[in-house]
Image (tube, rainbow, N blue to C red; front, side):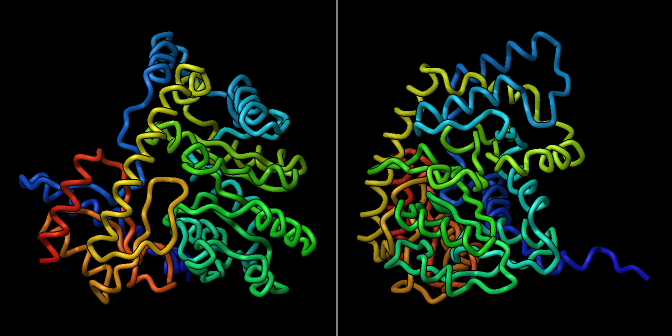
Length: 386
């Protein structure tokens, strides 16, 4: 007899930060003031040109399905973005518009993962990536990455973890939860190694645009056989619109199209029309101002946490996170985060969500709040620590 639910669900962990958010919202509903530093979501509203484009499309009443791979004009606009920002020529035929970066990762793993195939992922890393692999019967294999290597895998570590069962590697730059980047030489070398091994490289670039000392280089600079996942959520401040994209090696575009037709029909039509305004000069000027504000917040928060006894394990070069070592203050970051929420009204994410690489020693602080609110959070933590 079949067993329900499917046995694969036994290996898919809950997204703990969402449960912590639920508790934070309950405290707010009861009248508590909570400083939110737990969720990876920009606090800025969607830029007005994007909203206006969506409003105009919705007002037309013509909110119908689009092609499964996305609006042709949006795919062309994304291709133009790569030409302008990275000086890389990507044909629009290789660009797939998706229901967020999550949709892009779902399509990628549905296309590539076989039952029992192993996929290398950095630990700590974005927790849902493990679950995308698991959902298609693949086996996520963690590479415990180290602070001295910027919490990014080295070429030697990837090679050491590669076995006859390894199908590929999924990297992220900038990474969640650490905000660190892979240096260009390492990324190029890993791409070459994966190619020689006959595997597939997937690179998550959803925080591109949000870097502070140096621009991130797209993995597409190191080969046209790499899957690249991108999103309108983070840099473009469009989280709730649920729109992203995937750059697909040419040989896989038909397979991805078949999956997209069956799994999604098409991405959201209003969101796609909205995104046509994302690359306009007016929107990009707004986003650059906000990038500078994120840098200001990082430059305030990182040293403030150091002064409280947290240790900055690796400098966050991008995204909007500080991954802080809290081992001088507690031996259990999960308990610490829950106590901090209840006693001080500050919500942060424990390392538990991000893997098995010393999670009890780390907390992720998202600087997705104003400097004034971050200052309030720091003051509350100071009082909490006594």
